[in-house]
Amino acid sequence: MLKWLQLMESNESLRELREAIENAKRGRPRRADGASVDSPGISPFRIGIELVAGVIVGTGLGIITDRWLGTSPLFFFSFFLLGTSGSLLNIYRLARSQKIK
Image 1 (cartoon, one colour):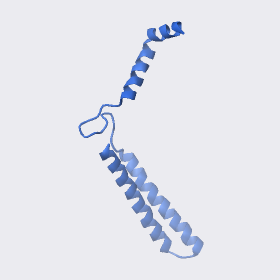
Image 2 (cartoon, rainbow, N blue to C red):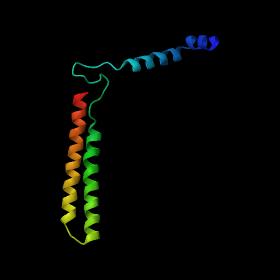
Image 3 (cartoon, rainbow, N blue to C red):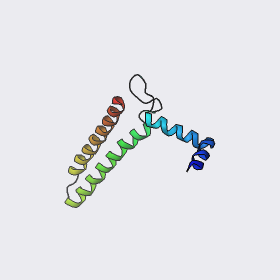
């Protein structure tokens, strides 16, 4: 066991790894507003995906429901509005969570 510990101390990459783990355990440095120094903030790609996904899912459900029940634009518009509002709510929550951290 002692020989293994000595080998670990002599290996530079393991020492760097141990230091990185210790730094991660202590926590990341934070700015004055509380955000992590290395946090990129809100990704524009993620915002776009959140918006498009909700609209597509809502529209798809509306079209499928309209075809199944034989109602023309009723469920299409309803689910489109629900998908859009759900997407906007997700983006708001994402922005708010980034602001709090």
